[in-house]
Image 1 (tube, one colour):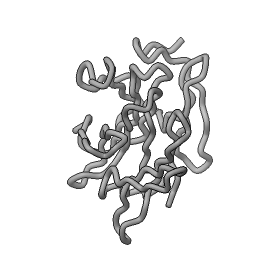
Image 2 (image 1 turned 180 degrees about the vertical axis):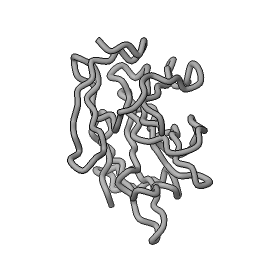
Image 3 (image 1 turned 90 degrees about the horizontal axis):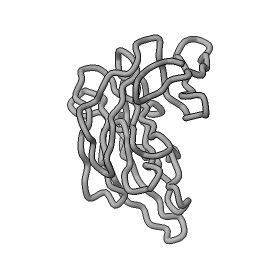
Length: 173
């Protein structure tokens, strides 16, 4: 098992579990009860390896955003914490990966092939189609900080950056 993220209340842990040599599933572990719930049955690998599969709870714990491969394309999905529903959010060719919720849960950002993208949310529903926020060079969104978004760019040294980015306007400040 490869741990990915804790639920906001700290009762469940999202993990990637190897199915076979070519794929893995996303599971939720309820540690106190010892329950394992499979949320995504396959596709948690990508062409760059299992660790590029990402999953995390929304700030209120009602949704899980994850990146998974379906039909040869890595996309962003929403999954319910009980595994009863899975919905694909992105359909661009190439790899969409590393989703990250805003602290309020009203914006989901992710890395696309050509830069940073965002999906605005109203409650549990996307308000509109994904929108382009910023072009390359961009990398994996890691955390929201007071000044904007903290991220890293993939290269030989894994360089880390802090981008003073207003995600709603895509303006760097």
